[in-house]
Length: 135
Figure 1 (cartoon, rainbow, N blue to C red):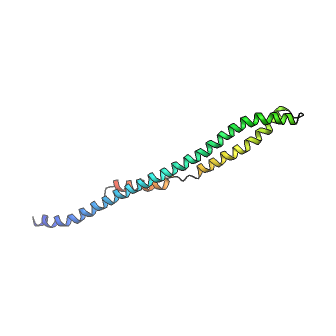
Figure 2: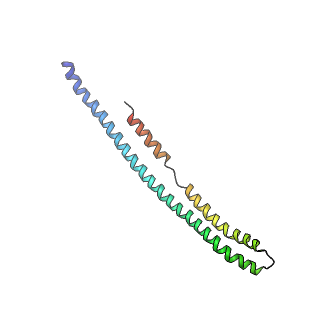
Figure 3: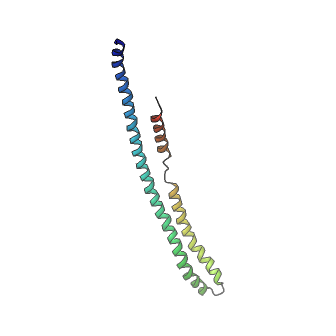
């Protein structure tokens, strides 16, 4: 019985230490989940902004292509009667397509500049793996 009395108090600090480590791991995982949520929210906000730019470029490209092509083609055909109508369409399409392509490229670059969440995901996975490992 004397052996049982001596191991009881010795086990208590170890249990408290293990319990404290477990609590610290839980807090760390909670903080990393909060950080991951914050980073995901920021990435989503930037993606929405990039989508807006890309969508605006596509809409302007489409509207500009339709309206300017029809109007300017016939204006060019009227100004230069020796030019074929199809030549007028090609000239105007190039003049409208270049700004639209520039807007689309700018939107694509904004998408590519959105940071990925790889580091946060990797850290979270490492902590979850460490927590689930038996010690």
